[in-house]
Length: 174
Image 1: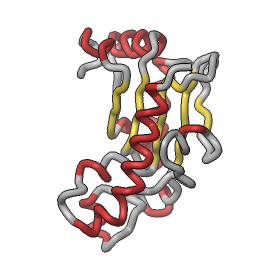
Image 2: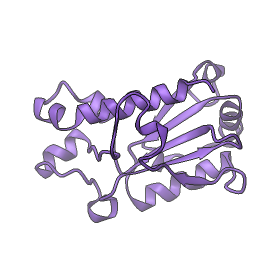
Image 3: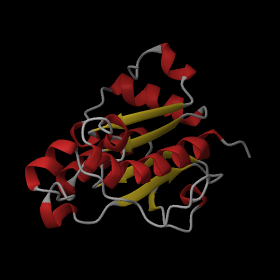
């Protein structure tokens, strides 16, 4: 769904990938802000390294200014890590192409992306509006599971656990 489409407001949950290259138009900024403040939830995944991080931060802070919506780390004691499955830490899941090319490495940018991180932007009531999984590609655990049984067994159980937890957490009512 495009950020300018009215259908966006019919989606309680949106996932975006490779946001380290995002550039929002002024209209997209306005619509995304409306979507989030009306109860929408965005999970961004699969962006690696410092350059991608800062590009994303610049764009999302146009949508949700840091003065009112700071970016905060999500630690393993947060309920999102145990909504259904007990997840002790955020797994680092590489793209299957990187995993194959590198002989099994998980960090796509070497030392610069060696540690996967989860961050969130919340509203004044502590409702997460934007969840960010940086230096990991959780969704590749679902997208590529059928391509290689070794990749499936190494990454998909953890990837599904995180994905299901995030989805369930985003849909809960308080």
